[in-house]
Length: 470
Picture 1: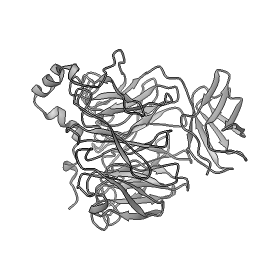
Picture 2 (picture 1 turned 180 degrees about the horizontal axis):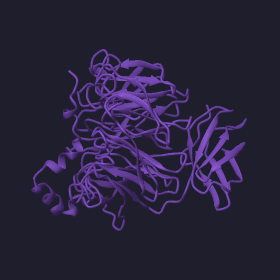
Picture 3 (picture 1 turned 135 degrees about the horizontal axis):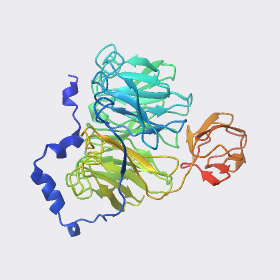
Picture 4 (picture 1 turned 90 degrees about the vertical axis):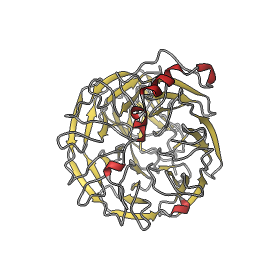
């Protein structure tokens, strides 16, 4: 039977429901008992506060940088109709509500928005639509929303994941329930809205995926399931773009359990992810090869974080950054960084005044600064948008991150108006400056896989990930 909305409560809220003795225990924990270094001096700055009227409780999704330089996101609840919003916020902080959902066009958006190559933003809702099983939508940067698909349980239900745009131009995602076995599905949809259900999960291969998909450099789509597999506590899988699925790994509990978050592929070729439970009970971070060899890199011990639910992001310093929805010195969640080898440093423990329970992940803006959201905390206890600087330099980001010769590519960055050249792994490209935060370019003949570089009057900007030329 399909979950009701009330059963879909953030497990990241668990620390808030525990007695005050829990927080006291965290504050009194002896640091020498824990292996994780605690950094000092990094303090997030609150750039926007939710107050119910403009939305409340941003959930799993990370913010998305738009081509115009604004950041876009969703709140799970509140707004004009109390079922969630889409908003934009400038890096300096003014927040604008672009759309309040009204149930007919969706309810309770939980995942990230996707900036597609056509310049529009795509996303999903947990419930609502023509039935009660959720929707897929697109919205212009100015706020004009179009509903593309309403799930009907047979093709999926209850979508938490954000979408990805694959190398074929189609959008791919997962649903938590629905499908042939009511254990979730994998689907694709064209940017125009033509929907195809690709795979229905069976318990043995993995079940009920919260997480979205990623496309790795080998062309496969990779993801995780929250339940199912050999030990019923979740799996890692890969799937072709036509829906042929292979289970790569089944968690056992001791090596982690119940992964919420999507994977990320680092520049060393490995896939990285987290589990919300397992190990000694507080979650873990792991790496896994595309063939399925898993290494547990870090087990959380509450003081350094508890219950990670967000996708990791590899920053332009090569390290991975993320959040935990609980734990830390106050029990309200943390921000951390980790080397690819697994050395973790806690950067900040939230204290509720500037946010609490960062269930969503971080995004690195192209000026090098990180942005994120918290589910609660702030002046009205409805969540915040925050920024954290680690002193990293600016870079450029391509949309998409792969393309064949002749393909059109958006290049996002800062101070791009004076760009004098664009190269794809050293091969010069024809480009057009759209504005200070966007360049359009064409993948040149002879281009090979490697970083995109943009020469500006202020210096050379390098893409944060290598651009893949199939």
